[in-house]
Length: 116
Image (cartoon, rainbow, N blue to C red; front, side, top):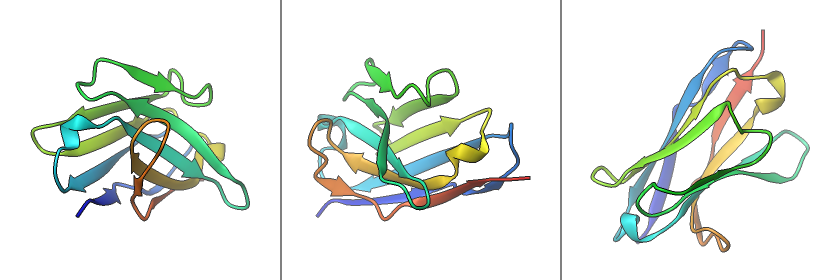
């Protein structure tokens, strides 16, 4: 059974950094693209970034380019999102999900709040 568990969220001041992690349990983590999606309070889901199976291909939303870095450790079955130069508008519930165009398994989300 596939399970995704996010961690690493919290409260940070504007301009600060957070590193989110997503622990994947189940078979064949390295067979799948992985994706980060977020949902700000009162808003819809926003796709942030994805990464291919061997981490050689990554894509970012315009809102994340130059500030966020997606990565993965296939030996440890962990997906990461390094978030730098954070802004208040980055405050959201962040989800990791398995897949690229179809996201078939999701974590429960982790809250990141950017505020002074």
